[in-house]
Amino acid sequence: MKRIAIKGRRFWPGEAILDGIGEFVGWLARYHQRFLPSLPRMARRRGAEHVRSYVPTLPSATVSGLIVQKYGGSSVATTDLIRNVARRLGRVRDSGTRVVGVVSAMGDTTDDLLAIAKRVAPDPGDRELALLLSTGEVVTAALMTMALKAEGYDAIALTGFQAGIRTNPIHTKAQILDIDPTRIHRELDAGAIPIIAGYQGWTEEQDIAVLGRGGSDTTAVAVAIALGADQCEILKDVDGIYSADPRAVPKARKLDFISYEEILELARAGSQVLHPRAAELGETYGMPIVVRSSFHEAPGTTIVTGDAMPLEGRERVRAIAHDTDVARITIVSVPDRPGIAHGIFAPIEAASISVDVIVQNVSHQNVTDISFTVSRTDLARTLRIIEPVAHEMEAQAVTHSATLAKISIVGSGMVANPGYAARMFGALAEANCNIVSITTSEIRITCLIDESQVPIAARALHDAFQLDVI
Image (cartoon, rainbow, N blue to C red; front, top):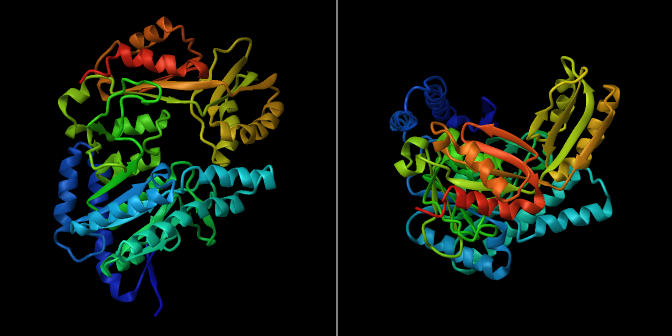
C-alpha cells in the first residue's frame, strides 16, 4: 500500500483524513500562538488543549501518562550505570506511566571517536564524521535495551532514522525538520519501552546527520513534542539547574524553578545543563521540562513560562553562566563602508558557524576593527574562510585568540530594574578581572574576560548578587 504525503509528512491512506484534521488543529493552535501575542501564553495553551479535546483519537493529541526521559553521557558511562537507568525506566513503567528513553553516548565516547577520526584524517569530511559519531548513541541504546530485557521489560532500540527524525543536510550541526512518530507509537502501543539514540537523524538523501554538542537534549524535547507527551525529563549527573556551576562556585544553589527565557539565555551563555535549541523548542511548543539527577529520585528544576514563575524569581539576577569554549577573531583596519559586515559574516553563516559576541570599533580615517567570537572547535575553519575575505577587502591583518572566556549574569528581573550592569562591572573590577568586551540582551549581560579569571569572576558575581540566599 502506498503512503501519501500531507505538508511533508507521510501517512497511510486510512490515516489521512484524521491527520488532516490534526494538521488543521495544529495550524489553529500555532495561529493563536504566533498572531495573538497579547494573550497570556498559558491561556493560549489551554485554548489549544480545548480544541484538541474534540479530536481525542488523533495521533497528535496529548497521550495521558506519557513522559520522555533523556539520560546524559555521565549517567550511562558504565554498564553498571546503564543497568541502574534500566531499572529506573522500569520503575516508571511499573507506575503505569508509559515512558520513552533517549540516550547519549557513554561517557567520553564522542570525544574518543572524534580523536580517532582526526588521527586517521586531520580534517575528516562531515558526512563520514557524522556517521562515525552517531554510533556512540546507537551503542548506548542497544545496551540499554538489553539491560531492560534482562530486567523483564519489553523494550526496543531505535536509531534516529528508525524513530523518524528527519534533519536538514548540515551533517555535523543538523537541525531537526520534523519527526514522524508512527514507529514510536506502534512500539508504545505494543507495550514496549522505546529507547532512542539521541543526537542524530537522517536527511532527505538518507544520510546520517548529528545535531552537534548537547543534541540529545534537543532530540528528547522534539520527540516529546511529536508524541504529545505530558513532560520531558532531562536526567544528568547534577540535581538540577544551579545559580552557577558548582565546580566553580561551591556556594551555588539549586533553583526549584526557572523560566524558559532565563534557561535559554543561560544555555546561550555557556551553561551545559540544557542545549539552547531544546529550550527554544520547549518554549515554542509549551512542553514542560524538568532537569533532575539520574542518581536519585529528588525533585529537580522545573522550567516554566515567565507568568508561572514564583514572584521572588522575577525580582533579581537568577544565575551566573560561563563559557570557556570561546575564540576571538579580529579583522584589523577593515575599510568602513556599507556592505563590509555582510561580506564578512555571510560566508561564515553559509558554513553553519555560529557567531556570538560582535564588536565594531569607532571608525578612524575610514577604517575600523571588527571582532567576533566563535567556538574554539570552529576557529580553524573560520580563519580559512575569513582570511581570503579580509585580504580581498584590503584589511591590514586577521588576528585571533583562544585564551578568552565569557562570564554572564542572567535574570528576568533585570528588565525593569536598573543598576545591574554597574554592580557587575564593579564586582569584576574588585576581583581584578579585566573586561575585553561587553554584550547585552534584555535579561543578560555578558563580559569577555581572560579564561584564567573565570573561577574568580564567577565567585565574585555570585557573592555580589547574593545568589546563595533564597
